[in-house]
Amino acid sequence: MTDFQTNIALEPELVPSLALDRALLRAIFDKAVEAADPMLVIPRTLPPRPLGRVVVIGAGKASARMAEAVTSVWGGCEGLILTRDGYARPAPGIRVIEAAHPVPDLRGQAGTEALFDLLKTCEPGDFVLALISGGGSALLTKPAGRISLSQEQQMTRAMLASGAPINDMNIIRKHLSLAKGGALAAACSAPMLSLIISDVPGDDMAAVACGPTVGDCSTAQEARALLELWSIPVTPEMAAVLDGPPLTCRPGADALSRVENRIVAAPSQSLLAAAELAQAEGMSVRILGDALEGEACDLARHHARMALDLQAGMRLGDAPLLLLSGGECTVTHRGKGIGGPNAEYALALAVALQGRTGVAALACDTDGVDGAADAAGAVVDALTLPRAVALSVDPERALWNHDSHSFFAALGDQVITGPTLTNVNDFRAILIRPTDGYCNFPQHSLCSI
Image (cartoon, rainbow, N blue to C red; front, side, top):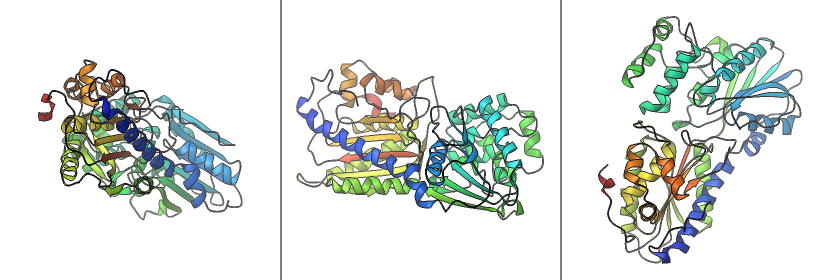
């Protein structure tokens, strides 16, 4: 972390305690990420290596790390993995292809074709191990009908800017693709075990990476309704696919009878690991849920009110209280800022708290990338807004333009992890200590935004 004491002439007595709180929050986040490391979770769930031909496939931000874990137990394996740029890992015998995320590209499309070609070589006596994690929705790129890659890219950008929740986006994607909603598993005649790291609210296996090995209950009619609801433009090619035969496999379909799906890591497990560390450090912990959704700003305001109400009931000497939550917030974009749901949550939280002492928070994506920024998220405390004022950084403009990462970069308060090689969705932690006041700085108009 960078030195956040720069340019602080305000409330210097707060600096040592805030440095401690920031260090605690970062350690708690790191523990949550560690709990979802495939090198830990895969060996615990991996069965003995089957006899005969074994083929390992996968797609997602964590898939290469999952393959690395598999080969550490089984030894070298034949296979093909699609992962995000920068997330490749060594896995003897397994080809690892990096491609773009969250907007698909030609590398992802070519890699998906190669994956299907490999599955076509599998026979009933072979065994296929699928490694699926969040991010696979963009990496598995196989547009249906006459939909072009360019059209899929435009649709993805529109969905990401719309504020649509991940489950809605994935229903749309499933019914315009030949690689989702069970289609990957259906292309294989060999028995398959699919190990899944969940990054979706509710841990619905059919939603992780658009469920390439899982039966799908949604319909093309639902996809059409969601496209309209979120104002996503529909091209004639997309309309023709939606009007055509179903592309996904229904649960219980014969084509999926050879597949077993298992979740091996989920947000709830990471929250519990974080809670255990916090309790060992003497904190009381409340887990608010692992499936929270909605606009990042709205959730931040709600959590700020909750934190202030809880702090008002605390007495000096009480143990610190930690609020933990997971899930996936959304941002309905305005402007051209560099933001993400975690940084936007953090900025909106700081604004709503208006410099209240005794409250610090961290909001990060467990995959290490929040939105379009090379940062996992950000950390805030009572000095966030005073420091912004001292640096002439306008939080109101940043929040309005969804430019939260630029705001936190100016303050040196981004959380930079690099690729974490896993993905169990967003992680939020609010640390509350008993106190009796606010940091001394002018009130800002943002509390009304």
